[in-house]
Every structure is written in structure tokens, then in C-alpha cells.
Length: 510
Image 1 (cartoon, rainbow, N blue to C red):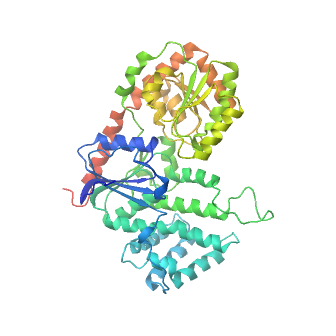
Image 2: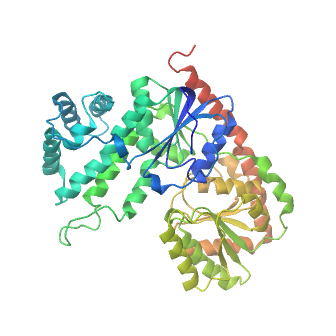
Image 3: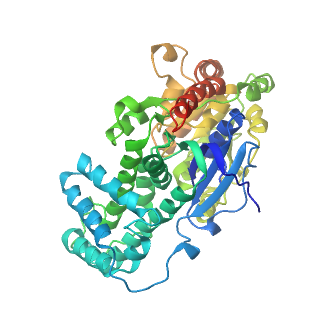
């Protein structure tokens, strides 16, 4: 497939593992944002893991995307230099050694950031800190051995060596991308991580204004992934392991992503969160408070408001989870809750509307759980669905997730008049109960329950579905809340101001 190419653009969107290859969530928001500003020309840089991990586009590129490029962090291909013995660059080694020495002052110290920026600048093609030296030079080998002896708490040098390589090698690819990216007037990242590193490097080396919009906090989400990852080794024996401590390699990955986040925060202005709790988390993770703000997601009300007239006056006994069939959505807790719901409401249905291809093993485990609990007549896997076709037929939108940011699916349900039952994650309590006194005066638009508690999830759903007056009141509150605080017009107005400020501050702007 050929992609658009251009020599320049207004705004570069740096996207890690989202649009246009993944549907829903951040990708849906990106699609909204790009289409909202047809006057701006966008360049999109997609960063993925390996090419085989992604299929076809889930979204067509909008007409104002004039440039698209994709890079796969763990598919080095031809950009990796051929093995060859070398001593390594003495100046580059001195910069890296200075960085390691600076870390003794603590990761938040200005000395560390200055030393890191000196290294990243030399990672650009032609600099003194090059990938070939990192992979094959004696200086790099000696440095890795020294760090292992001084700091590694895991007995396996082989695992340490390959962890360092896998972790750091993509940074040179990103340095090459930074140097070769067409001229842009502003850069917009949807996360920290590797995309945030690329954005910060562009801001550092080109002076391009960097906008950061974090939906979920990247470091928090990576911690969840790393806690569950089976590919990260723990070579300690049964006598060495403390069950309260993470393995050394998990700690390495966590500290690495925390540091990438700190580097991105150093260069981003503004730093935008979806809601106040995440803004406070950004500050605790190193974001300068004066650069932070919150802009909540918004949805197009006109798309869903007509559906209200199609909804029945009595609550339909249908609980609908709209989302990907992946562990972070905790589909299994929803299924277990449906066993209790069906016991008390034999007419109840649980619908799971979302793609199951991302984690086939988890999807199969979820289907097996349905069979083992005898729920074949009560739980249906619908796959991808048009949300507008679901809303008139369901009684509740249900979120059983163990992590969320500000889920659009709740807002879409609200706009159609559908109340929610959600776990207490991300901004969901704010969305259901209200943020401040004025918001709370609208009333609750559903019920909040703890994570991984199927009984409480079931009981909350049963209470709402079994009390028509309460269900109708929650529906009215949902409509009022989304109309007052979460329309796309409000969001677009706020981001237009963000873009105008960034573009006015771009190098060469009048």
C-alpha cells in the first residue's frame, strides 16, 4: 500500500501502537482530532513493535494527512549495522559514563537531564554515540559488564545483556526518524514512552514545540503490562526471591519507561491530561505543574441524541460491555458477574461488543469461561458493532476494566441516555458521580464498583435494572452531564487554542 508523502506539514502526530492500525480508544480520539481541523496539514508517524503484529488500517487516513510513515521498533531490518569489531568512540563513551555517574544524584536531578540530553544529541546520525558502537564495540561491552557487576541483582549476565540491547536499541531508530522527519511546525504526542522520546528529541534538536496529550498515564499502563509479562525472566532461586519485590528486569523496564516519561515532560508544553487525577499523577512523575492542564474527551452529541427517542421507558435487561477482548478490560469479571445476574434475572443478557483478535488466547479463555459457567444462553460475543445500533437495545453500559483513562464508550452511552456501571478506574467515578459540587448536583448517572469484584458488579447492575425510577433518573443525569461537560465542540475549541499557541511559537513563526 502506498502512503502519502510530503516535504512539510503543520503538525506531526507521533503515535505508538494506535491509529490507524488499532480501533477504539486513543485511535478513535486521534481520528476525531485530525478530522476536526481540516485547515491543518498533518504528518503521522506510527511506531509499532513488529510489522506482523498489525493487520490492515482500521481507519482510512483523513484527506488532511499529507504524510504517513511507519517504523517498527523490534524489526530493525536494514538499519542495523553489520557486525564488525570496533573500539568505539571515546567521546561518546565519556558522555555515557557521565550520564551513569549523574544518575547517582537521583533521577530527578538537573545533572541527569543535562547528561541525558548530551547523549541523545549524539545519537543522531553522525554523532559520537552510534548504534554500531553500542552493539559491537569493546568500549560498550566493557561498560555493560561494569554496570552488571555494580548494579544487577539478577545472576544472569546473558539476560541482562539482551535486556539492555532490546530496551535501548530502538532509541537509535528514533534518532534516525527524528533527523529525517519532514519539516513540521509543531509535534503532538498521544503518550510518553518511545513516541514521547521521539517528540522530546525533535523539541530538543529542532526547537519544534511539543504538545503532549496523555489519555492513560503511559508509565502506569506499562507497569500493569510488565507485572503480567511472562517473557521477563526472574532467575532468582526460591531462597533468593522475596514475593514482595519485583524481579530486577521488571524494575529495569519500569525505570526505563519512567525516565522516558521524565524526558518527554522536560520538553513538552503544554502537558495535557484527560482529568484531574491524571494531571496530579503527571506532576508526581516529574511534569512541571505550570505546564499541566486537563482537557476531557468529548463526543459528537448529534450522533447519539436521536437514539434517545428509540429507547424504551423500562430498562432492557441487557448489560453491554463495549471494548476489546483483552485482559486490561477484565472480560472475565464481567462474565462471572453475569452468572449472578442470570441467577436472579433469567431474562438477562450480557453482550460483549468488541474485537477479539488482539489477544486470541485470552479471548478463547473468556469463551471457555462462558461455557464452564453455563452461560451460553446469556453471554454473547458480538465482535465489532456500530455503537448506534446497540444503544437503543441495552439497559446498561458496563465497564469491568482494571485500567481506563476517560472512556469514550461511557460518554457515547450517556449521549444516548444509557446509564453505566463501571469499576473505579481512571475518570469513571468523575463521569458517574460528578467532579465538583455543580457536577454532582446533576445526580449519579450509574454506579461505581471496585475492580475484580463480580458480585458487586452484578448487584449494582441488578439494582439499576430492577428500579425503573432510579434507572430513569440515572439516564437523565447521564444526558445532562455529557451535554454540559463532554461535547466534542468543547474539546475542539480547547485544542484549537492549544494548536494556535504552539504554531505561534514555532521557529520562524511571525
